[in-house]
Image 1 (cartoon, rainbow, N blue to C red):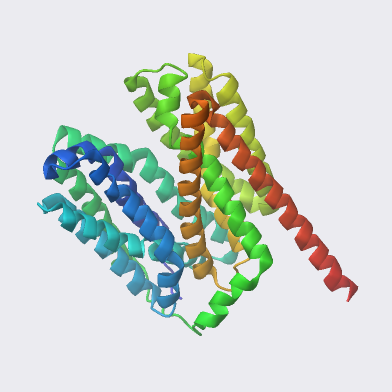
Image 2: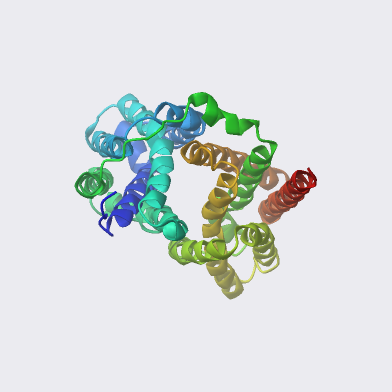
Length: 391
């Protein structure tokens, strides 16, 4: 492969940023959407839930179908679909049309994510692949830190159309960059569907998949109710909550690179440490939750640790999916979304039955379950290696 433009990794990260902004930015503009289409908040909520549901269901299957297609064509097609979808959001006058164009990009969301990670790793020497993947992951954290609040700001200060056209503009820039700088990447020696699906026969992979579900459930059982917790337990006003949401996202960017560096040194040690570290953060959030200044400090540390969840999960899951990395990444996208769904549901149950302050224990419960599965997986892998050596 000819030498690639060093900005190409940034362009892939920008593509991911555009996808996260499209997926999550809708949350910040739901009030304007309800006014535009004269619908209820629960109806508008379908724009959020249908996206996550389609991502969870379609990810592995569409990634399999696309596994033989030139990676450049896949990446260009997906960012173009996201650009078109945002333009439709901006100008459609029918809610049903907008809902349909939430489903369409959601179908392709896992494909871009999976292919972009593998492409980034292949564009650099093998010893730099983990750093390249970390940079692409940064597109997610920057999407949460800037894309989501900026979409809300544009809708509030200018118009709903301006907010969605911002998402389209980002995807167009990513399209132009990929078109200009990414060399053609035809798939050589395409793996059969059977061989890719064959990794699902590995018990260790399923241990890792369930661990990913628990990690994301641990993260989002509490984070989904972040604003409510700060408002009711810490007694912060809306302005402070908005500031800390922004700060949380900004610190996530630093945390992403921090955990990327730790994973580069040792995947196993970092994966073992992550749920324990998260449990400690939650204990601080529980016992210091009613104290204003200490809770501000906790939020900053929480954001840095939260950022590690996705990159730690990706590294852990793909250790058992090296034979089919793109399919493995699609499993990550699907099952992490399942974890978000489970965590949000259980967190809501804790709030309704035990009260908002006790919400923290739902997160701690999932962190301990994740830690237990990680230890079991390590023990199983060691015993398997010992049996092989004895033979």
